[in-house]
Image 1 (spheres, rainbow, N blue to C red):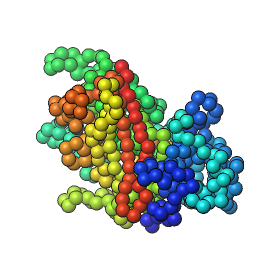
Image 2 (cartoon, rainbow, N blue to C red; image 1 turned 90 degrees about the vertical axis):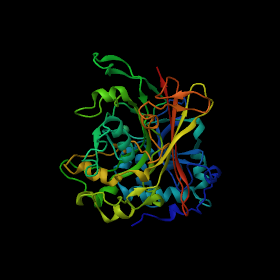
Image 3 (tube, rainbow, N blue to C red; image 1 turned 30 degrees about the vertical axis):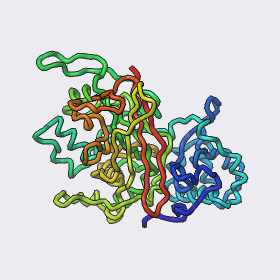
Image 4 (spheres, rainbow, N blue to C red; image 1 turned 45 degrees about the vertical axis):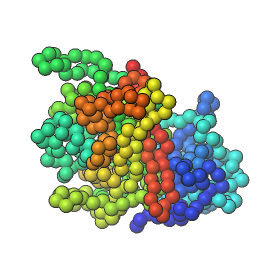
Amino acid sequence: MNGLDDTHDPALRSWVPSANEPGTDFPVQNLPFARFRRRGSDTPWRVGVAIGDQVLDLKLATVQCPWGDGVHDLLEPLAQGDLNAFIALGRPAWRTVRQALSMALAEGSDQGPFLELCLVPQRLVEYAMPCFIHDYTDFYTGIHHAMAVGKLMRPDNPLLPNYKWVPIGYHGRASSISLGGTVKRPSGQVRAATGADPVYGPSRRLDYELELGAIVGPGNAPGEPVPMAAAEDQLFGLVLLNDWSARDLQAWEYQPLGPFLAKNFATHISPWIVTMDALAPYRRPFVRVAGDPAPLPYLDSEFNRAAGALDIRLEVGLKTAAMKSAVRVSHSNALDAYWTLAQLVAHHTCNGCNLQPGDLLGTGTLSGPAPGQGGSLLELTAGGREPLTLPNGETRSFLEDGDTVVLRARCEAPGAAPLGFGTLAGTVVG
Ligand code: MN
């Protein structure tokens, strides 16, 4: 039931030396997927698995290494560079491949000599989007974010009455999701000073949002909701997600239908998909504080109560053009989310809406309850009224051109191998 097996054994080591270094994001217990090629090679994108500071090329590995019964067929879509086709196979296939890769990359494996020839150093590769994303939905599960933003917009009524009953979300824009690198400052319509007409121009309140993104598994047919009991099987893995947001555009346009141009110009995700199976040691009970309503039955399950939440530490770094390296400006934990990923799947499909393999579900900004735990500048600066002072004396209310935002996530707990998500960095350009 808890999903733990030999692949999570914290004592497991790899024959790839860098995978055994304490600080690595990619020990043999992680095994995330990305699409990559040697930088500048102009060859078709391949699917790879991160191990330490290397990428295991699954096209080469499928052909050049002997595999156990049934594994070769499951590796075939990966060998062809098609992560969506592998995602569509579902959890039994994911688990079989995870088990096979874990054994093959573990110390003492007799597949080691074959696979050694299939490694590429991560520093020599470039990444593509890990899968094709048909549709993107962004939720609002960070209750501390919802409270903080609600206070800024509606001081007397910060949390709307539906929040504790229904997972709030909106349909985002799939075409502008990318691995990023840079984000161009958007222009749009902004409310002017009291009494004046709105104006069109560059956003002056550009912000980031610290989120996780869930990659949907096999999906469901139209008209067939996914019940909670099957919702976990619809979750392939997680990426870091930065939901770039123009707060001045947002404040003017968001009523009555919600976010639109303030959000859809760019959403960045990290290249590595950390699988839900890798995160099994970091599952935690889903709990509601006393007095809050219990989820309606269609959003409840025994497994969700026992292990629906995830202990993932998140942080945001900021580097201005004048700084040599990023400084941490906030940190939070995915445990503070008000809804679990399974609840998002069950709710999204409860009306019969169909999800497809590779769809992306954003968690919404994941903020903690304390000062310094806001997952956006909007919260950290109280809507821009209390600018952050950085170590070099610069101040920021919102992002300036040349600023780089760096998101990271890491899991650490007693009795489990620490693992991470890599980094997601994006720089604002004018
Ligand atoms: Mn968002």
